[in-house]
Image: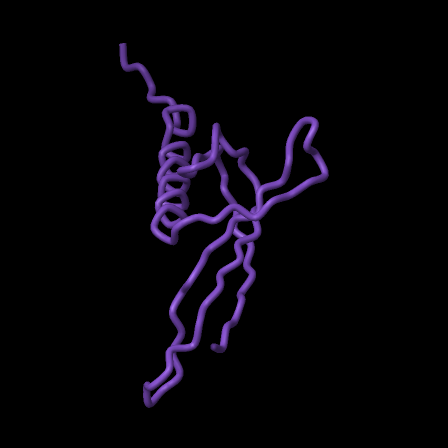
Length: 104
């Protein structure tokens, strides 16, 4: 079985949650590890995702440690989508708009 792993870095602009992990994770950069296996019997090269992991750095008394947390691809995409939505909402907050002149 041929496997491959891909590492990438994502940035969350806001604290976020993922199923199976207690509490909020802080905003910041996170490394993502994706494992895939080669599909056999095809006339072209194709891979199927077998696992996705999020590297979570320890906080408090666990600072300096990190752990790989398994996360489903759909939960990961949903967390990213929620973060992007929250960022867009914050970019369009009333504080970011110019004050209107009062015509009295």
